[in-house]
Length: 329
Image (tube, rainbow, N blue to C red; front, side, top):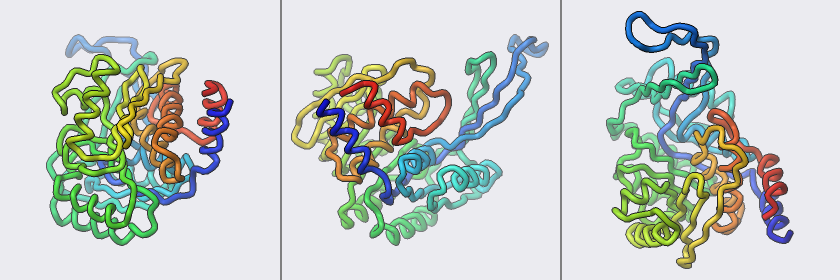
C-alpha cells in the first residue's frame, strides 16, 4: 500500500535529533500487593505490598520516549531537594540517558504520583506536589541553560502540567528564544496559561481542555473542528491537534484543513502516558522533516500501542513499524 510504505519510510528518517523537553517532571510510584482482609480501623481493605517500582512521568516520560525513538533529548525542569528528586534524576540517567538541566528547589517537593494496585486493579492514588510558581532565580537558570543549548536543537516540546514551572513570563521567554532560533515548538497544555503559547508550531489539547478553553461543545467531529478553528485563531498557532481518546485524533492544519484518524488500539489495557507518547512521536517525526499530517498518523499508531501496555512505558521505532504493517494504512 502506498500510504503504508510512505509511513515506513518516514520512520526510517526519524531519530538522531537533539530535541529539548521543557516542563514539569514527575515520579510515578507503583505499589503492588494482595488483599485478604479488611482493616479494623475503617471499612477499607489492607494491601500487603509485595512490589514497589518507580517510573518517569510528565516531561521526563516525554524525554524517555524520545530516547526510545532514537533521538537525543535535553530535559529542562525542577524537582524538590528530596529523596524522590534524587530518585527521579537517577532514573533519567539510567533509562533515557539524556542530557538534563534539572535544578533542585528546597522549597518544594518533587511531584510524585503513588498508585496502589491489588488483584490486578488500581485501588488508590495519592499525589504529592507543590503547584506554587517557581522562583525567578530558578526560571533564569533554566532560560540561560536553554539559550546556551538552542543552536544544537532540532525542536522543542513544552510539557505543561500546571505544577509551577511554566509561568507566563517564563513561557514567553522560552518561545522568544525558540522563535529567534527558527525552532518548531510543540505544546502539550493544561488549563493555566492556556493562551500564553501564541504562535507555536503545534498545540495539542485533549477534548476536555478544548471544550473548557473555548466554552464550546465538542460532542462530534464538526463541533471539534469548529472549536479547534476558534482556538487556532485565538492562539495564532500553525496547527491544533486534538487527542480524542477512544475516537482517535483530529488535526486542524496550517491550511485550515481538518483531518481525523481513528484510534488503532486492539485492547485498551491502560491509557496512562498515551498523550506523552503522541507528542513525543510528533516531535521526532516533525524534527526529521515530516509534514504535520504524516507525523499525526505515525503518532496515532504510537498512542494506540501505549494503550495496549500497562503502566508508563515507551514506544520504539520497531513497535511503530509493526503497528503500521498490521493496520495497513
